[in-house]
Amino acid sequence: MSLTREQMAQRVARELRDGYYVNLGIGIPTLVANYVPPGIDVMLQSENGLLGMGPFPTEDEVDADMINAGKQTVTARRGAAIFDSADSFAMIRGGHVDLTVLGAFEVDVEGNIASWMIPGKLVKGMGGAMDLVAGAANIIVVMTHASKNGESKLLPRCSLPLTGAGCIRRVLTDLAYLEIENGAFVLKERAPGVSVEEIVARTAGRLIVPSEVPQMQFDPA
Figure (cartoon, rainbow, N blue to C red):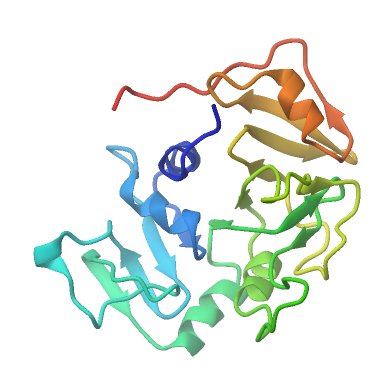
């Protein structure tokens, strides 16, 4: 079985480290705010100017003026700061973000990422993703392993216009956790119930499969 959006966010949250400043991109990455492990103190940054983002609000906590970059209502933790987008991007461009989590349409074996252009659709540009992939040395891409029509999104070479080149080293999909090394995807973990054979079949780029590939572990719901 492939991972749910919530399970993908839970798995990424395990990569958080105490003291990190973390940018969460639009989509599945925003869910990571709900799964920060106990005992880990991180400051979550939203590129629209919020540092110290908390979990999504309950109905009685909703504040229409408190939103993330995806225009979803969020909460702010104790010690949070609100500032303009110029300061937010100065933080990103200055290399002050320890980890960036963002989505993508394609990633390839050279660590290239395509995340902003959908063929046949009008797009306004790549937005803050350009700055995020250029300003962060530690990036995790979160995406589905294949497109809706079944085509692999882990490729020998990205076919869409790039957001960044040679900047991605870690990818989490709904099927697997992989790292990019020496021109190949290296399979590190697989989703519970997903076989190595299925991952191989759905990965177009060069894939290295170790002799043992553990399953991801999740606490019972």
